[in-house]
Length: 235
Image (cartoon, rainbow, N blue to C red; front, side, top):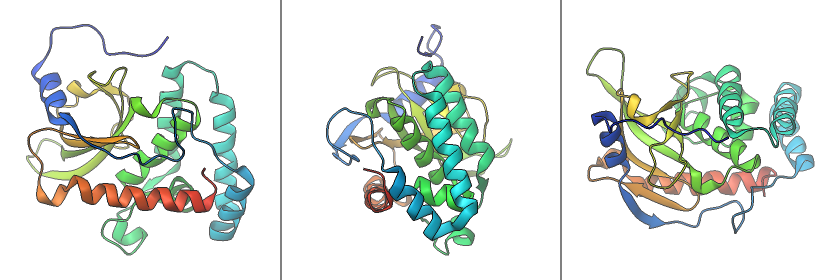
């Protein structure tokens, strides 16, 4: 049985979250392979890439990821979401891009994130997205969501990215996040103000985005991630 948000009167938080993700702005067609089939990979090439780039420690994490995929194939979606979220939240240490890569805004492939064992919010979200697609979760039900996140009880906000699972295109998403370990409906995440969301099929946005959160600039980084994934062994 697939998880879904409980039936309840529409809350201000739910309305805010859905409004922030708005309508389809652009159909991108940025997929690992055409058509609705689950993403594929070349385990031999991935092992070679990991060994060359990150050595035995990275290879050990990759083998744990292969084992995760094998164990979760065919299990209920709720279990897949929870265990994929936990796998990366526990194994990847949060590190800012400038310290990890020497760049202000670098998006890593899942292999690079697992190889280093560290990354930032985009890296967590991308790794979870690709892993769930490997398990056969339709890409149309997954979106990376760019948000403003309020820190603690203060009014300070920072750019952040989470992964959302959507039962339908217009549904309230369930949020997979590296900051909050539990998977919760978007409307309950009152600390998050959504700006736009995207996946390999399109870009969605509401009525308010900031220049520093330019969606098209993010799609350019996403295209670069996909190109590197292909080189590393994702098909």
